[in-house]
Image 1 (cartoon, rainbow, N blue to C red):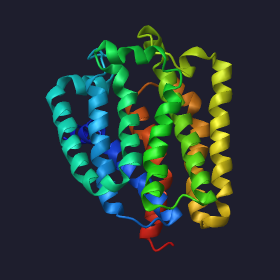
Image 2 (cartoon, one colour; image 1 turned 120 degrees about the vertical axis):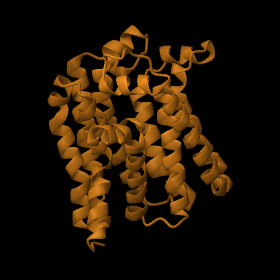
Image 3 (cartoon, rainbow, N blue to C red; image 1 turned 135 degrees about the vertical axis):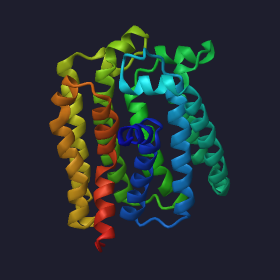
Image 4 (cartoon, rainbow, N blue to C red; image 1 turned 90 degrees about the horizontal axis):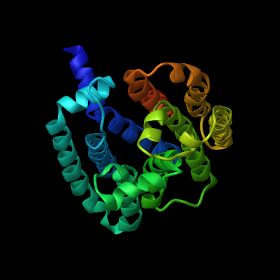
Length: 282
């Protein structure tokens, strides 16, 4: 029963939606943004539920490939229901955001375009042949939704802290995305999906990976004058773990490692930050 509940939370995309919300909360707290944040959190939550269920519904695979694909293939109707609930919820909470329709529409379009190559129609399938920056694109979407868009909605985009936090998030998420794409690169090659991960040899990928981790650390350190020491510590914790996990992740294909632990690394800093604030920190 416990494993079934855990699988439901993880594979129904509730877990990744919570990750997105907590990361957005941290952005608001670090940058001291003032806007209707609760409404935006709900929008992000439901939009993530919709986009991820849509993405996984379109993802082919054998029932023997992985725990997640096995779970997905047995629950196709549940995925469609999750997509529908997410779409309705996102649409409802997007209504108060209509005055910010341009940056919000950009987030919606970018999210759809990431999954568009999986749509079984020639109008979209050609995207897989030109998606050289697939990994960069996904990292950018996550960074935009959880970091840039809240600042745009709050109308507070003229500080260096926004630039530093955005770059820190992007390079950390990009490094994590590299691990996902490295695991799937043989499958991507078979399906004709082109990306830097499928094209570059391993030595070049190592440089790309550790370079991204290094830049994530540098931009976190640049935030030092503007954030308390514990917040800086929380930003560096997932960077350190990401720097150490590469070989292990490449040698182990467990869905729990990737979709729980690695996805969780994206929100680890925000989770530590939230616990610190809840305990009375500033």
